Image (cartoon, rainbow, N blue to C red; front, side, top):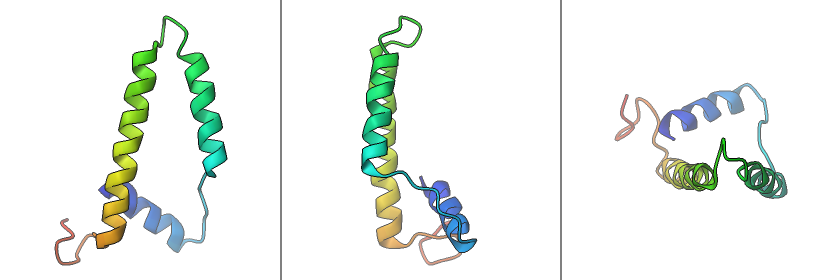
Length: 77
């Protein structure tokens, strides 16, 4: 998520907007839930994806709150 934050900052600097609305995200989750019925994918994969995305959003939020950026105090690399 930290590296994602850096990537989003670079994208923003260039004036490019790559975002989904909440409705788009929910629609995508519903479609993935339907696809997860397949024995090739399985519901466990869906839950893993949702957990991973949730954790990624939380960490990204905290990086944004604390402005953790490379070269800044406490910013790491």
